[in-house]
Length: 315
Image 1: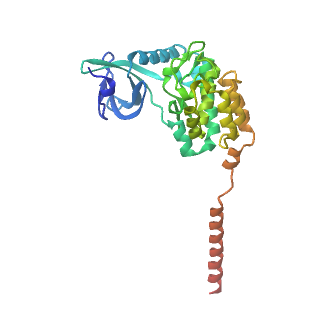
Image 2: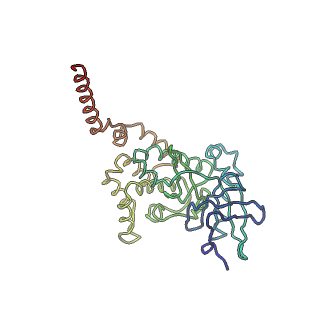
Image 3: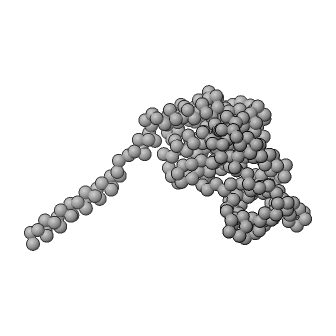
């Protein structure tokens, strides 16, 4: 029996929906995760581009689809309307291949790159702006009664202008329920820092771990690997933050987030914005003067120009 993991979908493959009969041509692979594969596809011959996700587990994929449909039913909710999430889901169908139906859904194609790749390419100066926009996205979900759950760098796409989009809604959970999908490093249960009940502080804790991962990946990896699971604690994480030079501009905020001192992402975003308004090492670096080598080169060129003019006037 054909499974998604052993099926081949090279560029040019046409996916035809079994029920809706919509045709999507695969252009390239966008990503592959624990619960599915995402392709960039084009609808019809010269249609728009979308992202198409096929699921390894039909039950998991259906759960994700149900969340996105719930967002559509809440499309009149102000916070969700601002986030653009209700327009995320475009089509749901099955693809019949070799006697088996593979479920898929089609979503809005979001251009960008994962958070950690963006920060490495653009520099840590962008952390302040991107962090604020991510917290605001999470706050919109919380206001509508949802927690994102599986927050990690791969599930955050950032455009060249620092715009942020959340992708992969498999971990989205109603507030008050048990978080159904998470990644260990960003899970407060993994660090013995609280329960896995979906509330606003769960996402804020995950955001703090995401920040640590982006700026101190090696230190976090070493900390997660050492000792017994029952000995992991918030104190270990705060000690890492306190000794990190890269995290120094975010130190107070991050420690508050790790200790669950923010009510939700909206509260965390407000304090983050206040932090942005204060002078910081990041901002001082971003406003640094012209590099010395460029100043020296300019000075030399001016001296040479003056010399040429004097020589021309004399002769």
